[in-house]
Image (cartoon, rainbow, N blue to C red; front, side, top):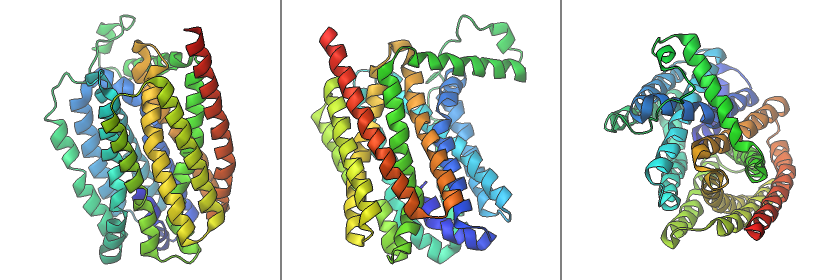
Amino acid sequence: MQMKSIITQAVAEDLKCTDGFVSFWGGIQLALVAGSGPLSAVLLRRIGMRKLGTITGLTSFGTLCMMSVARSTFTLALAMCLQGVCIGILYTSSVVVVQKVYTGNFSQVNVVLLIASISTNATAPLIQILLEHYGWRGAVVILAAVHLHIPVFSLLLDIKIGKTKADPKDTLEELGQHNFIVYGNAFLKGAIKSLHAFKGNSQLIALFLNAVCNGFYHTAYCLFMVPYAVENGITAFDSSTLIALPVIPCILIRLAIFFHGKIDVPCTVRLHAIGQVSEFCSCFFITFGRRLSMFYVGSILHGFAFGIHFYSMLCLAPAFVNKSFRDYALSWIIFSDGLAVIATAIVGLYTNSYLLGFQISSGVQICAVALVIYIGLLNGQILGRI
């Protein structure tokens, strides 16, 4: 997804539209990646990871090819949206499957999964080189070819992985009719049922809102960092390294967590608070520093915070609910990022000011800090009762 930040200006010039328009639809794509979480959980329960991974992998390949030949803004926007849904379903399903298969040591396996996901950001300088040699269309085609590994490896999975028995309240005979309306109703019921995870759960609600706040800044960083740095006199290549730089501290902190072993809930909450302070400082340095050295410091702090946050959120969400709602809690926490992405994309569309996006992020980060304090207080009260 870091590709959108790098190719924004090239796409805008080719299709004769504004940078804000491309950033907006890049944001919508990121929103769909996160926003497809609840749908992913329902689909995974119905058809399993093997079929779901194969379908989404092939569709993702097709949408990237469609994007590479786009001659209108409508085709570009449609391809970006479809690809966002595919990647979102695939990513959320992978997290849920890992949580189910490795229940005992999910904390450590979660770290491995997150290291794999963040490692793609290290390819930002490579994408910049592809852009310079083959143009944005050629770069997208190459990335489309890379996506073909998804259906191949999905077919190697056991067909039962991820599937669960249908809810007893559902009528199996109706589901066997292959009726679009019946399937739609089943998915709608599943999505509504997933909301029960929030019922009377102040900790999960606060974690959800905290994820929205952090998602706003993370999206601003992904979408605006490169053009914002260029706007402040930084070269295009140096600007692309700012996307790759957070990978190093992110992987280091996740490796430290991996070798430390299992971390209990109170320690995870404290770790989440440390990451929040780091994220706030990162936003401050990038917004008000506006120099390459300050951008580097902010990028390192962001990588440190991101390395903690996604780990802590994916560990705390299932810990705050009972076993039957764990997959739903995970999917909604990932979905929370989508809400923030949409808000960030709207800012990019209507302001055409990358600085304003980071300034708004600074205000939102204050709310995020307050929510972390609230989660800590709630966690202390609950432990005190126990």
